[in-house]
Amino acid sequence: MTIPRVGFISLGCPKALVDSEQIITKLRTEGYEVSPTYQDADLVVVNTCGFIDAAVEESLDSIGEALAENGKVIVTGCLGAREEEIRDRHPQVLSITGAHAADEVVAAIHQHLPPVHNPFTDLVPPQGIKLTPKHYAYLKISEGCNHRCSFCIIPSMRGDLVSRLVDDVLFEAEHLAKAGVKELLIVSQDTSAYGLDLKYQKREWNGQDIDTRFYDLANALGDLGVWIRMHYVYPYPHVDNVIPLMAEGKVLPYLDIPFQHANHRILKLMKRPAAAENNLERILAWRKICPDITIRSTFIAGFPGETDQEFEELLQFLTEAQLDRVGCFAYSPVKGAAANELPNEVPEEVKQERVARFMAHQIEISAARLLKRVGKIETVLIDEVVNEGAVARSKSDAPEIDGQIFIDGATHLKVGDFVDVRLEEADEYDLWGALEM
Ligand code: SF4
Image (cartoon, rainbow, N blue to C red; front, side, top):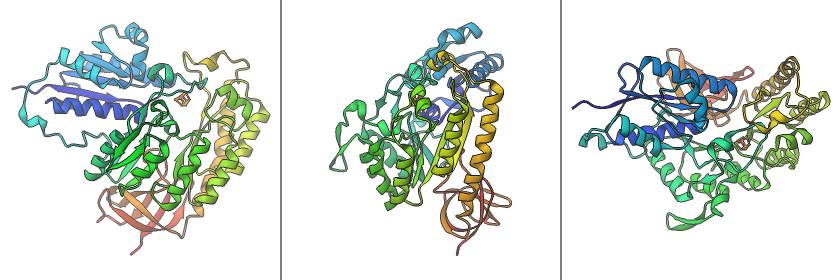
């Protein structure tokens, strides 16, 4: 019996990664194997990203490479919504679907590479197949987005908000925790809007009624005894309710809030969710309730029409908000985005200069905030053990995007261990520490 083998290329954000995991889990339950090389694969799936033009190019190149190396290619993911563009460049692709289409992708694979029945391949762990290391996992709670930010085309690719029922999410989270996952990263396009489309439908969980709602979900996840980290939250008033859960230690004191700008006119032009809120006031109030909260954010510099003064306002906001982790991107027009029609495009060299000034300004703030933690004892999660010692993350650091904590010599530790570390040194991004006995 020859086992059918599928190659898999997963591009893009954590939400796309969750889609890939779902497809691979389905395939493994049906007896397919995942091949790490083009040559050993009978067919290749490319899960694409279409967020910015560079990601579109990368996706189209990956499809081209898979076609050249293997020849049988199925395309899915965000870029799949722009089928014509893919067909123009790569007419030989076997099938194209958009994001969050695991069933369609598996159906296409059945058609071009039928499954072979093998009773042993039913032995898939109940938590499914994860592409992240075993000790942390992304948990996708909804798909799509009801907003229409003018620089973004995600809603046209992924559609409006579709939340998963709260008991379904909790069931998966509980399985992951039982399987040894130590940290769950909650992802969606708009985590704070969770449940809105379901009118916060009441469900039953562990014999109790629970609403399909951001607060209720966070509260119930907090009972699982693992780290819960919230990503892509917008500063709506109801987010305030979750901050006490962070102060109590049920949910990590960490919020990933993509503010994108500080000036109200620009935020309105961007059509950002919660654009009318006073973000600074909100951040200060959160810090009063939970002084240890880490706030990560991203911003866009050089949005069409952004004046020098509006950019200065953004720098002033950084000074006052004292955010911990911040990324900044030069505005780049995405094909199909409404912002492309806005007047007064900012010249490329001005955009780049603003990004550089922004980062120089923020690096000082981030470095000063990290320095304040030196001397403290913090619980960290071990991500990797190398020859020189262990590499860990604290409650303030999400994997891949934030900093790390290096513990020299601690080679006896294991990935997934929680240990206490006395922090001894810091630079702009990372910390160094010693095990606290
Ligand atoms: S909130 Fe805005 S940026 Fe985020 S996915 Fe929705 S439309 Fe895009």
